[in-house]
Image 1 (cartoon, rainbow, N blue to C red):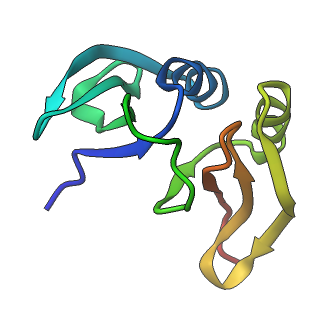
Image 2 (cartoon, one colour):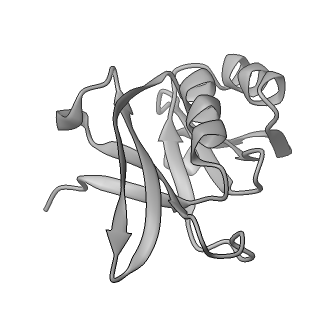
Length: 130
């Protein structure tokens, strides 16, 4: 099984797409508008290097629903430099949730953050096992 995509339900799909582009370096693949079971939506499809084959992260907006209230997903990202990522998160309106910490048993450094709409992201940098 392969994970093809994740969809984050958000209020402002364009603003959230800009955030994930600036912080994680994702590229816009496509914009879609339509209806799902009679309910209008808009979405911005993002992918690493704009390449569908690498999986996609979709900013999804049910345009006639109230803004999402509860966290229903934790997005996970693997990065090469958590320190640099932390700077991009803050510079683009996100917030850090605690400090970067080592999880030596798992071979990672990890830090949680939230995007400008409050969605939780778990950010992981692999470290060498000793």
